[in-house]
Length: 368
Image (cartoon, rainbow, N blue to C red; front, side, top):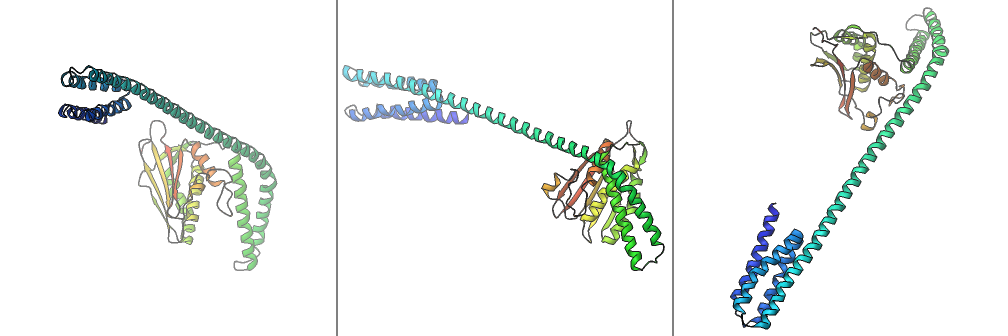
């Protein structure tokens, strides 16, 4: 709007200036009048370009009105001169109308092309969104197929591996009694027992991932579960030189859930945090509450997770560890979702990681 007023002002000033040149220049300098009357085409063409057909026609009419008295009163009586100048007025209006019409059509065509371009861009965005949705669905199908295969593998593993593992561990424990601590063979047997336990945990992770684990809901204190886990991992944290802290307040944070499975989920997160945190680092656990439920936040100042890896850490079998199975976080999220909870991870390389879990209050709330 402001730009339109400025343009109208410029057109008015130019018409006024050209008219003054006509009225103030002596008639015997006719060659100057011929030049001045051509100057009128400049505001007429500009008005047509700026405002279209109406602008060009209005400006040409205004020029005609301003120029007519000059012809009648200053050139009156000279019929040949008057006819020439009357024809010039006709040309003003023809040029203004035609130029304005052409400019207006060009502007309308530009707007139509712009709308077409916007429509194409919108269609492109929709196609891109649909493509991303198709890719996500394909990824879910591949994951489902992988989990289906995993279920078949789990049944075989349960029979072919767990039973022999139990026998191997039992035999190793019997042999351990024949050697005292400090004996090299005693240490080898301890290693064998630990590796057997680790392999058994891997098999259990496969089983948990492949089978839908039923959640037994009962009164469960999140604070007590976290305190229990603190006791379990405190020695590991001490050996790693990592400061482990829990900020839970006095609220027992009661929910309806499966304490054993939640304990497993929390333990997976804390062990990951301890493994990623260097000596003299820290792992902090914070339990808080809002209107909708409880939040459990696990923060470490470890190595962090790269953005590319952060998008895939919940995928089964995806791991950045040399000895990992890639099932820990997948199992953890499955447990949290089974409790109608949400799990989010924020991380920056070199700055640490924060895992946040939100578990809803039972229907009707919970007494503190």
